[in-house]
Amino acid sequence: MDQDVTIHSANFLYIEDGNALALRDITGAYQLIDLRVDVTADPRGRPALGLTTTSLTGDLSIGSIELGGQGKRFGAVDLDFLFEDASFNGQAYTNALYLQGGGHADAGSQGMRLSTEWSLADANIAYTEDGNRVILSGLQSWGRGDVTLSVTRSEVRNGTQFYDGLRIGFEGVEAGYRINGLRVASEDSELQGGTELLLALGFYPAYEFELDGHLTLGPGGTSGEGITINSDVQIRNGKAAVIAAPYDEGSGEMSQKGLWLTELDYDSHVRDMTIDLTDEGLAIIKGEAWGTMNIGNLRVGDKDTGQSIGRFELQKYETGSSMMIMPGGAGTVCAGGMGVTALAC
Image (cartoon, rainbow, N blue to C red):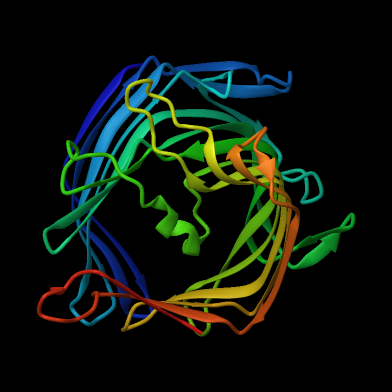
């Protein structure tokens, strides 16, 4: 199957307790090449309905992101992407999804399992606010593993703790991503650093990891409608760049030089975290959260062979922590009416 689709106009509205998240003035297009559907087996020999494709390319523009009842906006977002076969770290990746019956083994006989493999060869994400634009350039991602979907209730079955809601499970996922850098104003502007500014959000310029665990989405927020999240996530054998050397536009490869967290193991747990739309913005409240990060080596230079500063362990525990994400920046005449404000306590 080949498919060409153009989105001339669309709007998306999510309403909770009378408050709305609105994505307005959506336009875009995508082209799907050589989608094949087969009754087959996945790479591990399990019977499945297989969907494979040669490439998927497209773009999406969201003209305005609005949240809350203050009449303020986050701004606009533009995305372009290309999924096609590519090699990362010496391994070949394709784009395939193998649909199987049955979710998590302890959740019951029903559910869904997706044996997946993906290869995002290139993507760019642009954020525009009051006429000012910044572009997250050259995003690439790859991986393979199982994703399970199960509807569960709060109980312990065969030694596994489940929670009320839709359980999205991760089993044996090996994945990674990397970002070339930032561009300001236009796609043709000079590539520059700055992705390190995203570290405060837990987003690294480059990251390779093995993932297991679950994210369970339950109904209801702090009161009334909303979302409640319970999760347990384990990351193993991670390699995360704190600072990465500039992307080499000549060779088309990202440098392996920088400051790296390697032999990284991270356990993260969240209980009763609520997400609500309010008149002011998006309210996130953690009932309880804890985690331990073990960094086997903090390497300077090459991520595999660079000299190690040493080993670190970080532990955290939170209860009742909250964050409010509101549209509108500094609020001054110069800043305009768009932007993002985040308040945490």
